[in-house]
Image 1 (cartoon, one colour):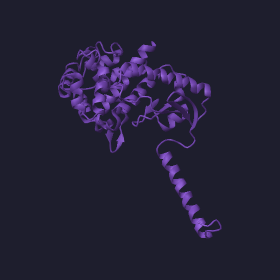
Image 2 (cartoon, rainbow, N blue to C red):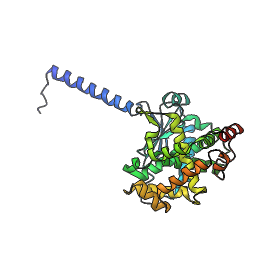
Image 3 (cartoon, rainbow, N blue to C red):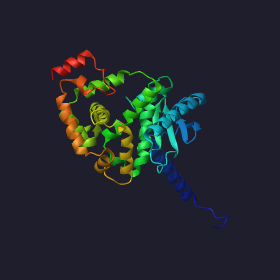
Image 4 (cartoon, rainbow, N blue to C red):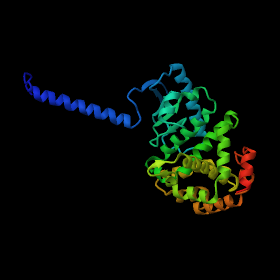
Length: 314
């Protein structure tokens, strides 16, 4: 085009207006995805970068980075993932102020995106030792999603949450932290689950806690409790000491294209249907004896007297 060529003013105005609309659309798209434009890079460590839209100092960021990498390495050692999975791909951690976390993600201390690239957490972890297990829980999800790749939807949510809660509990034990009110709440929920509820959770996946397209938080919480009890059952009643590590084998097999059911049978040497049948029968047998249901699990001894009495009269 000749250097002295000049577009008509109407064309210039149209192009600028169009570009403005495109910029606005892109901004709305970014906000809709939950990654606000005001995020700033605060610090980075290895493959981890930490961003925040709030006041997070560099020293605080470095503290978060250390906590995160310690939990990440713990999970790696526990799971002993196959070397074919790239675990050190870039990971973004978005740290929100306590107030913003409550406003935008009420009831959550942190959560992982299923793309295996983003982890959102509250700045509360800077002052709460128990938040370390949230790190191990959610980072366990990140490692799992990286293993599953595009097959993440093939694995039931109860199994994913059972794994995450197992990692968080193991890390809590590793750090020597005592049980807290969340553990007691899980014990109560497991004690109150009926055999029919257990079967429904283990056979309907997401539909159990989604109603009219929205999550039922109470049912979702019960599903998570069933998930961790499923793992505890495999370990205690199923006599599988490395039940958690075998979960990693399930994830790896599904990531290579196998169904969840076939991967489960290959990893555990027993069919999923048989385990579900045995577990629900056990739930029926212990409906009035929560202490027996929780015996030798990580939740043994956490039930209060009120819960025990209520269970006896079911």
